Image (tube, rainbow, N blue to C red):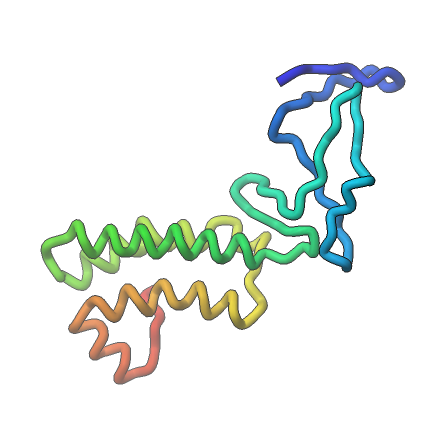
Length: 149
């Protein structure tokens, strides 16, 4: 990481290797001829940017982020099911709420999932977890509800 000062504003800013910009446009292309140069350092144009753990693409869509979150949540839910020998529903749901729900809900105000495919993908994590709990699966399929909270 290198610190540089702007010549006209005399402000310090950091130029690091993970610095990138994205071009928000309708045509899904990052135009390589357009780039930003600061003090002889080229800042690359990328198709998606991750900031504070939230990934956004050049069309301001969060589908990639939802996919990544669901992969992490599925892994944690499967780890809970593998590590607990007991099938006590209250302890498993407490573990799910403690370890999986925060992954699914992190910054959800920012990336509010409104496409149906993203909502289904997020709900699939909970449905798969409840299918592995025999007693809870019977209760949930009979009432057609998948809300653990």
